[in-house]
Length: 196
Image (tube, rainbow, N blue to C red; front, side, top):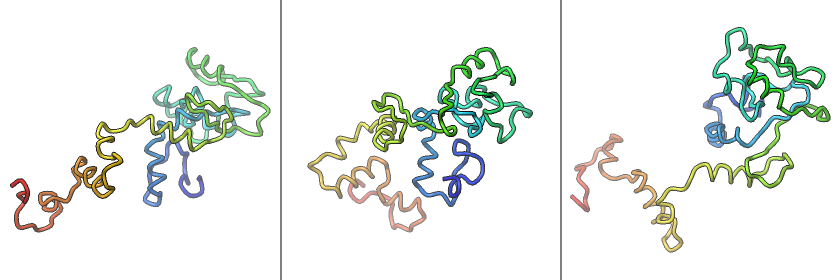
């Protein structure tokens, strides 16, 4: 992913680019939903960005603090700065007592070969930590509820062509005379043929 989509910076802070696919742009738009489904498991903190990765209770340090001072906001600052010999040392950096407590409660697993992301969506039954498309789909599907017109438009008895026509009608996307004229297409009259 880093070689193709996120060439500079990291996934959580990068913006859409003209070279990105439509799918990747959609993933970028839904990063907030994905943040609730992953967590960072630490070994030594050397692979985790201190400020930008969501490693503290599924949030980044920037999300918690709101901003960083100029001296604190150094790109590439890793969590290994406050994690030494398998023990959190928040006193080596300036934090409030509350934030220090949150950091101290973040789990460390020295058995891991390196820091890694764990797929752990809320309410998921399997705790394997491996990504599952089904749980990702369910997470996104439940986050964005269906339109109240869903059953009306996508009922079984209606032909697909008619379903698409009704769907476009509800979205205001049918190419009626007034819409065509708004695109700059010359039409003799913008009055509707059916309803005048």
